[in-house]
Image (cartoon, rainbow, N blue to C red):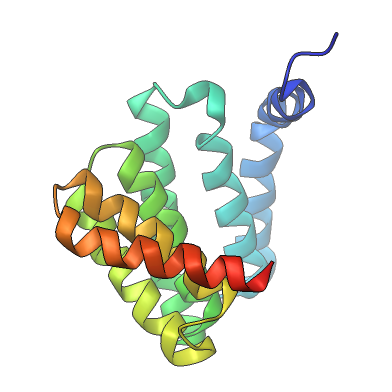
Length: 165
């Protein structure tokens, strides 16, 4: 019998073996397109995600490397697309997730508040993407002890997602 998530675990193991190629691809992209190009930022995000590999989550060096790369991606997306662009907001959400894993919960909360505000403006409060990040924000608020703020946000997210099902 296959263990749950076995395919996903194997996927990450296989992907991790190719991390040097991801780093090389990023460097080549910088040379070909420059640092402020959509393709280069995609490669930067891919390399950051490599460091968030589930098997490395206990290793603070990899989490800090992921945070560093994601901070670069946020800055570059802001420069290229603007602060409220979907790509910038997505990279901020990824950075918030990395910050939550490294216990920088206050920074994660602040980033998620920005993401929810931006997605609400761009897509509306009831959009699935907004609701997903609203749920993440509620989780981040719970982690810093702000239960009274978290509960109504989580309820809103769950009710909104339920309406989409």
